[in-house]
Image (tube, rainbow, N blue to C red):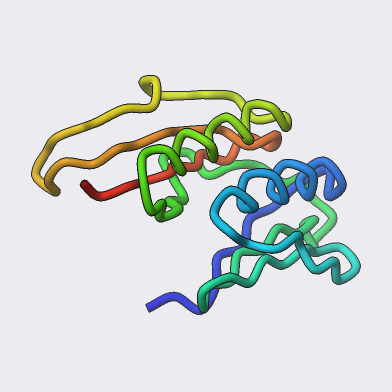
Length: 124
């Protein structure tokens, strides 16, 4: 359904440090740098971060969340720990099991250094 996901940043170096660490826990190699953008390609998916081309400051989407699939709750915990250690902040409830209409899931939430809300999700 998706060809790629791209979000904005005001500090490409800081974003690369954060996402290299966080996405590295999922097996993604370090970002490919292309001028004002960075790209992560892994398992047929593309995630990218860019400085806005219109020259305006980047901002996060209110109500938006980008979810990353994890193979285990341990991988989700490693993802969360890497994010906090590299400039992210924990948000929502602490990492753990949630049950709802979509079944039992292990979720861990972060905000990246630019305020974008991210989620590591392991379907149990």
